[in-house]
Image 1: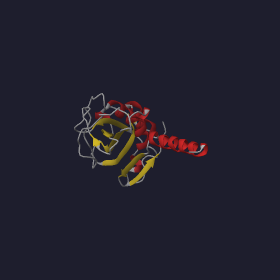
Image 2: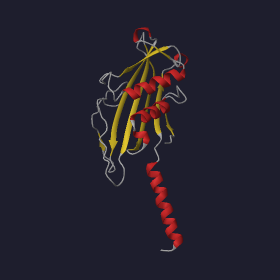
Image 3: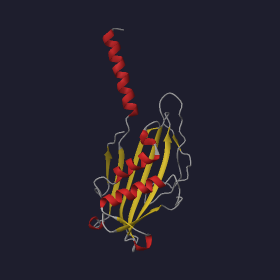
Image 4: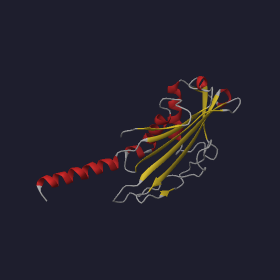
Length: 201
């Protein structure tokens, strides 16, 4: 092998390695009720766990906190449930996609589903930290915003994100902030549209 071809091979290997560790985009799908846009992003709101989730789960806490932070940024004021004009219901699902392409659920005390998303099965981290190709940590965050008085759904969104298990974005705090920020980017979004939000470590 010549020096030039050796250098080219090294560069190709480095490029592949970089691609393997670059976090994938966050896939975001949103649904907006007709004539609800003028009611979104304002008023008081209460953030709660979806049915089937442990309300005080430490695993869910970073995600609920990240959602609440995004809602405040959008113009909502967080309040107690009895005085809130809108309710945001949060569902979080985490899983491992193995290097062989198998989805590997392991319960970590979070689960549940809301709206039309998912099956309500609790899943979580079961990461293989061995050598070779990395496993990926997957996160699905779903949020439904509804009118507190009528229970009418005003907005639904889901964010799906996968990242290598050794990435800083696999850690719960950074992971939560990443998927929540992507979910609420350009809020409320277009009804029924799926977009990909690029992220960087």
